Image 1 (cartoon, protein in one colour):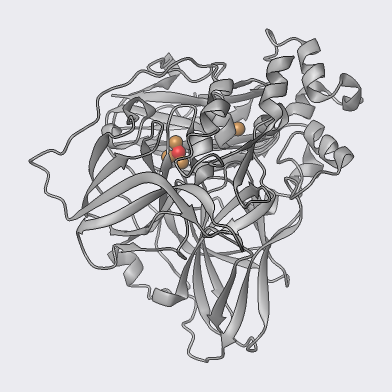
Image 2: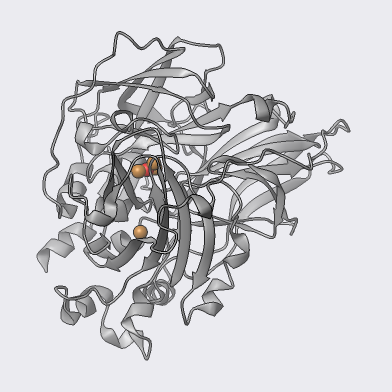
Length: 548
Ligand code: C2O
Ligand code: CU
Ligand code: CU
């Protein structure tokens, strides 16, 4: 199988030139299963739209100091404020990440994205409820040199959102090279709570990367890596390795975003303190919730109250990823264990970042008892309370499907056509047995032989967690249930879910079934839904809703 061999070599990104025409197109081309993408012309500014905030966003190669020593060649979204309030843009730790955007609910926003990369690019505003033509659909991908003008109103409530590329079959490699940025939206309800702000509010963007000896990014895209999703050898926080932040002995607000390609974290304080959760993807909860640990999959955000009151100057508290099972198929877990493996195994136990008390103080704000009631849709509003629409996940090497099909533009099935103005019940679950055209022989070869699987069924061996993300308005999680079998693995993750907030991404663990309720208001058009394991997304685990 010479093709597989070519795929599994280590690909160094940006090593050839700062321009980085290097390797990502090779990887992308090798993954191509879905054929070329249709293209629509870029959108221009509308003369009738008068923005409160206007930003130029340039996607271009850059260099960033990530590790000690040589800088790393990256791709970066560089934002420049043309119009809008002071403080709209702030640089995050001088990293490759884009400037942090600070917006307010109700603002009208114009963003001019200029593509100065050597390949196509388009940006998506993850979690924001925007018109279809402002959603960063891959059909609008810009050729090098082109500009796309996004215009929309910020309709979301206060929360932590983010932006990243959504380029056809190149989302994973482009995010990996550095293209991503955070968006913090504030509103009056949140202001009134007086939560820690300014220097006491810390954005924490979690990513994982692998570097070669010259500090350049390495993207390993062998068959195994693509199936479980890229797992880097080092954790980066806000674009820096070994992240340590000085704090005062008082309460802080941590705004955590998992912007990793595929890695799921099990966030836990190393001293055993519970995690006090203020909010999730779509903003604040009605009241703080206390959890022993919190699962955070790619695309998800977490708003954490971290109170260092009473801690001595010089003391350190570490946020870890605690061990858990079921992030990757058991087959892969076994391989991981057999091969030893370098770096950080999926579901492993390792530190993420540290907070060091550098100043003692006694003037900490108190944790509010009530926060802000999220406007959750209710089951009574569902158009289909007794007939949930399916989102069936099937994962097979080289065939990542939703509802039995890989991604194709403008290919909506009946179940993917949604009447505008309705609220829909969905059930997300794992669909197995879809091995038809793959054949067992092929599987055995790819996965190291059937012998490894022992007495366990193929289905159980293949099943893994998938963070499912739906564009458009945010949803409520109604319930999660486990299908027969995996109780032991599930026990390592099940206390880390927050069910009470507005969500746009939900990890569906091995053999799990998740019911969600999602409104489709305001905007007609084509919106994507997909796995936010970016390797899976690029392999076709994505579909579209046509709303209208
Ligand atoms: Cu964060 Cu469709 O993506
Ligand atoms: Cu999104
Ligand atoms: Cu997936």
